Structures are given as structure tokens and as C-alpha cells.
Length: 421
Image (cartoon, rainbow, N blue to C red; front, side, top):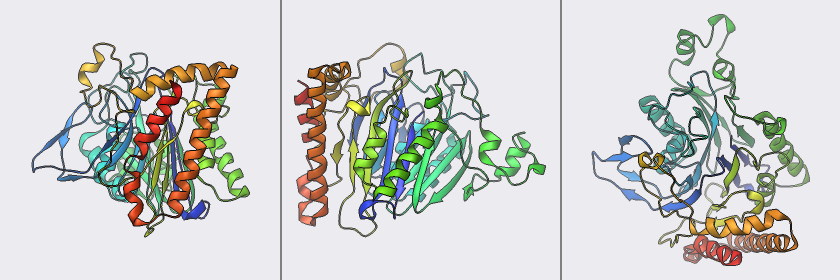
């Protein structure tokens, strides 16, 4: 049920591209933030994703991922080339309750796209080529109260020049490009007959499957494949259509007041009243905001992650790609990298060090007590100071400064954990 949005020039400060996503997952799930450096592989290598093996490629890009600790794939993330990808669940007529045949998951596709693509357009190709080969499926959660859901995925992919919305239904897909303004995805199919590219012979395939009639004209992807949400209790404000409109209104208001920047985006992701920050049957368990630098800019992109639940009570921490990164283990689960297959047998404590520290602090902040309000103010001030300092660092950036950021994410995560104690 996650929300993803991108803001492009001319609406943004400094002509950057802003990518944002809240990861709405079962409240029991731990979201970790992990870094993987670039890597080379020998010919014929296999890659084990969450459930199945796929062919590995010869070289993968450096990535930072916000991911459920139990699975291989990621809800969202970025790579060293300034590509950002996030996914959200969509329910389609090809979703069959109880069908959990092990295939690639939506999260697997996010990570595969980031590891293999140097542009957003290449990411669309990576995901759709793999989708046609392997399909999508498998259990969606380690929590048995949620893992029985069967859904498909929509993706937003962004780089310094453009953003793509990619929507899927089984192995069918449609995609469209945006080069200015905004692009928003919220747990429902929205592409109509305006797709720029689609899966092969989409109209004919949809007609033969009984999803579309020739007399209805050019195929409308959302009308052909959309289905109702099964077994999910949502209030009116939690419905995807309402969240989409709330995000759009927030961005429209901000654009009227001036250029949109990272502070604007963080405010939208923290909005509980609109359910963009989801609290209830599902919970926003992690958040990402990326500031993608303009093409040919010497200024590096900066990616901000929480790695903790409820954006309202979490701290966004900066990460900048560079050589010799010291990432640390504050946001990495001790079970990270384990196979998913065995995790469904019993309950495993996947909390990373920052999660454990934040858990105690969040309980206090949520009480609204004087001590809780003081802690929340302290954490907000820590984040504001970090935002100011990193923004100034990037504004005056010189190539010789890049080594100064190799410990950045680790140091901020360490400072955050100490404040909770």
C-alpha cells in the first residue's frame, strides 16, 4: 500500500529530481538499510533472489537499499548512477488468492533494476525483460497475517533526467515517461491508453485472455486489469485515491509557494492525517527521499533514509556514494542475507541496533508526555542540523570533498542511536 512520488524541474530547487517513498508494510516487519559495493561475477554465475535463482550478470552497480530484513529484494533504493526505484502493491485480475508459486517478487525487481541499470529507462528494460522470463509471485510477508496476500507491482524509476511509471499485471505491463512536473503512484493502476511502451502484443493478448474487447478501442491498461483489494480493511482516507490526491495537493501548494526541496518532501511523507504516513493495519516501516543532481553536475546525489518505523518519529539520515564507504551495522539486521525459505518456519528477531534503540524512543514519543515531546524535539533538531549542513556541503561541493562523506551515514545513525539511549 506504499506511496511513491517524483518531482522534476522546473518545480524543484537547483533543478534536481526529488524521489520519495514510504514503505508501508506489516507492523511486525523490520526494514533495514544496507549498502552493497559494485561487484564482478564470472560467466555462468547464478543469483539466488528471495525464492528463486536467476542468471547473474558480469557486473553489478553499487546500491543502497531499504528492504524487508527477511527477503533478498528491496522496497526502494538508489544506485551509484543516480537511479532510484521503488515499488508498490497493485491488485489485478491476474492475482489469484492462495497462489504463492515461487517466482521473483516485486522487491526482487527493485533490487535487480538498481544493480543492473545506469538510467531509469534501462531499469524499465531490466525489470520487464526479467518479468517476461520469470513472472512475479511468492509469499509477500514473513508475518502469516499478511503473507497470504497475492498482489502485483507498480514501480516508479527516476534518474537525473526523467521518471518512468511501470505498472504490471502478471507478465503484462505498460509504462509511461515524465520529464517535468510530478509523477505519483499509490497502490492502484493508473495508466490508461496513454502508455508509451507495453509488453509485446498487449492488446491482442488482453483480448485473448478476456480482459479487453476489440470494440472498446485502444487498450486501457488500468480498465483492463484493475481488481478490488481483497481482505484489506481501509478507511476512506487510507484509500489509494485519497492518498494520491493528498500528495498532489501538498505538492501543488508547495509549488505555488516556491521551489520544492527535500524539506517539503519530508513533510509530506510524515503526514498521518492523509495516511501517506500509514498507521494502522499497516505501518510506514521505512522512508526514503533522494535528491538526484542535474545531468553533468559535479554535485553528487544525496539519499536520505530512516530505517525505522513511522516517519513522524524517525530521523532521515544522508548517504552519498563514494569510494571506500564505511557503512557500519546500525541499520543492518543480524539476519541480513539469510535465505527467506527457512524464515517462515519460526519467529526470528530481525531488529537491527538502530531499530532497537528507536523502538524505546518511539514508545516514549508516541505517549505525548513532556519527556516524549522533548525527545522528539531533540531528534527533529538533530535532523534539521544535518539537513542544513549537508545542503551547504553539497552547494559548495568540490571533487576533493568526496572523501569526507564515506562515514556519513554511519556517523549519523550512531549519533541517533546514542540519543535514544
